Image (cartoon, rainbow, N blue to C red):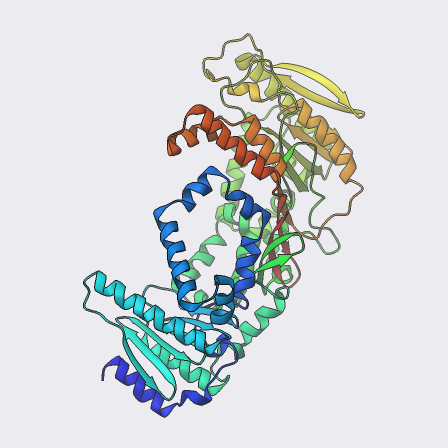
Length: 569
């Protein structure tokens, strides 16, 4: 029996007149692996289109070029045609055709069943839009000279359409679309049953909603339990447990994934910005012993306050206890990996000066690390390098004061060696009662290995204060960090084990201070003159200045893994 006939016969058995679902999720079978929902499409669109950032971006040259493209013109022409045909502007049409929500569901893999459910508030308008869509599809197929045409049937008040692998049904103000006829059949049966077999009754789907904040603009759910059954996923988790670098960088995240039955994510509109949140139903409570390098012991904080000195572009603060990992390596890692690490330590020890040993340094190194990127108030040298970099800084906690003594020995002897090659000269400064040891490159010594003068971006220096070790690429940056470490010592720490923050104002300064790569790109991609390219970069920099901050946080809590990206205007 042809697919269309099969669907019509099916609907004679399951009358759709009694299967009106109250929400798009009522149509989603619980066999799917991924579900995305939009409860209020108009609110989602307006969350972006009404932003000052979006309105002001229309004046930027790259955005103007995009809006003036053929594809954009065709889109807006089609949108205008739809508005005229249906007699309402697009915001009202979104409410009428999708005001009760949109759900998209499917399975991983090419050619697997997928489903789209759109539920409106106006049945007559939905019927008109459905008819217009079919007419447009038919006209386009005819224009392309294809023999396919939409085939439509109505049974028990439900309209069915099939075009090749496209299958759709409209009942009232709800439109259901699938790439598989039998999957569309299953969706209609689930809706007729009014819950049994629906994703709404699946435990992991219900539990997922409890982990997210309320009222997401968009929500995404992934049945990770089914993904973990794939052999490739099993192989991935097995390999990561044996890989030191992956354990070091993302071990905690991977372990939480390994123990999670689902992944849930959402986009939220908050006062002053937007939040993208990911949650996993697994946390630090069941971590294996080796992951103690990623999370503190109970009662300790996750990360120190972010450093935000004047001119900051980006800042991060993390918890990473390498000393614990090294000290307990006999218990935490296998023989093969341990032997590789110890061989590596032996090789490094051969080049370390005096009595400094890598393993001892690791054990004295504290678990709290903070890094910053910041703009220069004043360039460190009169000689301007061909390629300019911002300043960088690093602050680490010290478990043992001997860490500073060992690092001082190591860095002084390294500086002595480099002075022979690059003409480095040591100097000492004092800021806020803290001694800074710095090294400057000679501006008269010719260094053939650095014809571009890249070295003149750097004035490497370090200092120790209280239980913090500070290193920076310029003395100016080091002084700012010393002041900022003192300021943030009075601020409360965070339970999050990894935090980062980017500052639009700092990025704007960076564009002004280091415009050449962006100017060159504008010339090459847009065919602009040098003056026009500089004006374009200046306009982008001015737009960027008002964009606020982007904050990223990872919190491996006791039973929940939390990952958040927050943009604040």
